[in-house]
Length: 173
Image 1 (cartoon, rainbow, N blue to C red):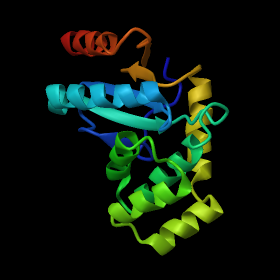
Image 2 (tube, one colour; image 1 turned 45 degrees about the vertical axis):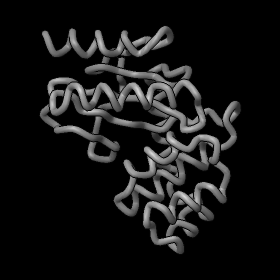
Image 3 (cartoon, helix red, strand yellow; image 1 turned 45 degrees about the horizontal axis):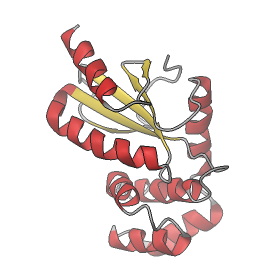
């Protein structure tokens, strides 16, 4: 069960009035999250305003050492109203999540680089990332990607078709 309610602090696309809310706990360095990213793009196009998508950070630093800095980069972009642009870049360019690549993406996104550099060097957005992680732990997230459809966890171990079926079922209810 989703133990942490969706709030204005979350990164969300789609209307608040959508009949279905999909929450993902993800890791920018996770290859399975990268696959899920592509599938979610298709699902969001397919369902349009019927679905709201929320992304929360769950960097698994013990396996993915670049995941936490990538999440910090995404939050630095969010502070400049460019979270979703950075989200796309990070998943579409996974081979480059080292600091120089992240800074390059920040420049490509048109961020104020002095502000970005300060945010990254001071770890300004790490509390937000830690709060997402803590929330994920409360929701019993054990790996990434982890999805919840209208608050109910969905196992996508064997493919994103299960997520689509869960969305279809929620829309039919």
